[in-house]
Figure 1: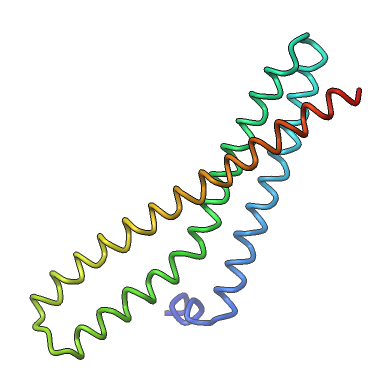
Figure 2: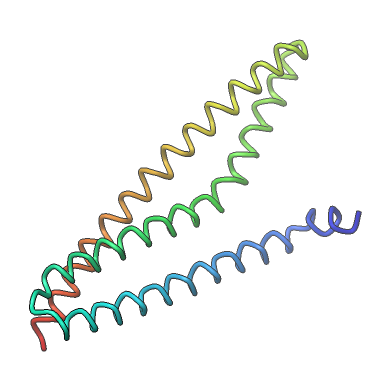
Length: 146
């Protein structure tokens, strides 16, 4: 009972939202540092740093793409639930019978979920590609400066 009362507060959701983004930011910062240290080790031991830069940039792009999809999912879930509830309430006010409402709700759930997944994958791929390209040029520029 206390948990339900606590989770109904807006401050709780804001705190949860901020803490999730803090964890994601911390993970991405640690990941960036570990990929850069891996690149430094590979650069000093290998003569072909272009391939190391390519591997490092692809790894950075993939990881930041996944992190951006997780962050977008944290925003998309509440918005999706509000949309879903609104449509079901409007269908109820239109006088739909319960059986029809259940069927429409199942169709609506599948449709909204499919749309959200497509958007998340598209956005994640865009972020991954941008991070990979920027990471590659940053790593190659770092190598040519030394």
